Image (tube, rainbow, N blue to C red; front, top):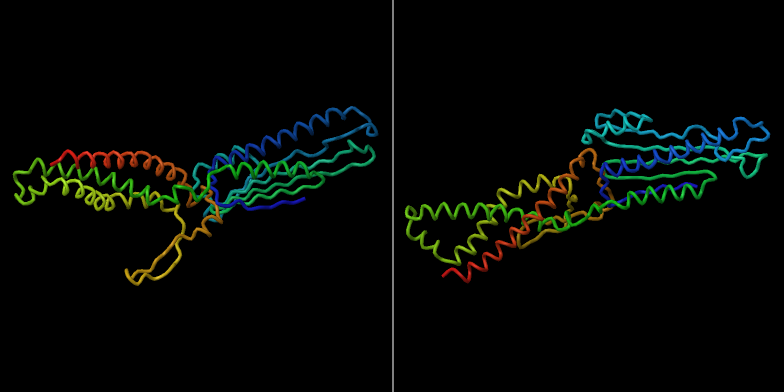
Length: 309
């Protein structure tokens, strides 16, 4: 039995890869214990009396890491693998290989039945493949494949609200920056009101200019200072764009997100995606704060409208 599948539209943090490695290590240790017990139960028996359910060599796991410079290293040592994850930006690919093989005459003392399971987990920057093969172990293969797949499927979708509603998050941040700067500008002007032209000072007494002018000024200066910051955070998170059409009225080419390609791949947080986990978390934290700032400012603007003359 063999099963190979791709996992798509998922964010695969390094913690998930470590969780998979830990599970395979636990499975390896469980089989090693079964082999050892079987060996001890039969070691003092005559060959004709020996009955094995798990007679095999030590199960193994191999960790392979391919680096951006082309170097590829394979080691069976779990601690070595963990130590290599300190600098994820230089990693191009991670492979987990797991093997268990043994023979059994438990059901038929005169004949041995041979079993094995092979498992490969491949992680590139933008794709993940899981493959499980087995012989005479269909149930174990199914359980192993289902469990490993379940861990991967339990991760967040790549195309989530951080991406879908990015304009809301970006503008929420930009407006918040703009509001702060607009208040600073307003109070500086207010403190120097006597020094500014009377015509300009009269505008400062106009509630429509104060309220709507603040929102306009916040949008302009907020995008000047805030947009570049958000674009840095979103740099390796957003989908690629495709040409859609030419807008005759604006005389511009229109580009749209290539969603189909985006959701057909993963975001494994190694290589160019190594900082995406921190950036996604930071974006959501910023939005949680700035959305409240925008809401408060909206309430204040309504109050200003009724209070100011």
